Amino acid sequence: MTNRALLGVALAAALLAGPATAQGHVSVATGWLAQHLHDPNLVLLHVGDEAQYKAGHIPGARFIRLQDISTSQGGLSLEMLPADELRRRLQALGVTDRSHIVIYYGDDWVSPATRILFTLNAAGLGGRTELLDGGMRKWRKEGGAVTADATPAARPGALAAFQLHAPIVDAAFVRAHVGRHGFALIDARAPVYYNGQQQSGAHEHMRRGHIPGARNLPYDSITNDDLTLKTPAQLRVMFRDAGVRPGDRVIAYCHVGQQATAVVAAARVAGIDAVLYDGSFEDWTTRNLPVEQ
Image: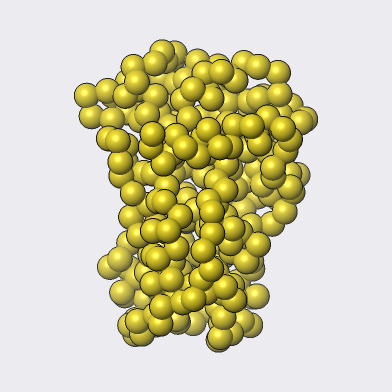
């Protein structure tokens, strides 16, 4: 059984037992970061194009890629690492039991940043991990310090062993709960994929359309034009308009399990319980399950 399947089995009972997500913030303001930039326990992670990072990043920031905290397995592009390997990689980034972690996105790399946020939440670090609201664009606009100087290599951190508690479900869970009272299936991809105008999927399994019963809430709609997160009230309206009723648990999916984490983060801000179908449409089409347009 794959790591994702094991997580899905372990979480299914908990998901059915009661809500796992409380309303809360997922971001810090640029002003807060400017005041705490030199805190000894701050771990600052830059998500984006590596050439742009080298040309200019927030002082002290370390470059991080999705492959640094994820794996490809079973023919799927983006999967959660086992806990012991994830811990080893986080320690290599300098993460310790005292770290306050801030993730920021260069340009519009919001969903890779939310996937990293999702992963750190799964590792039990969510209480001290946040996004920089507005990312690098807002930081620059407000005159925040930027440097091209290389950040010194991290001193490996001392991070206690943990178990993963990721709100991840699999295809079987989706099939069993789509259309059931109390669950709302949300497709986080752009409308051209949801509507079937363009193909999505894995290699020979490319398909047009969406999982039957899904409603569309595009991942890039959770932010304003300046890439700051929308307010809890605005997000609640968006989820309502996508068919999410009070008390519903959102099952979010996208192409491979990246963009949907932006919807999961938005749900957290709005006080809505949400889980991720990891593998998403790539996994669904690989299994040759039905789609509709």
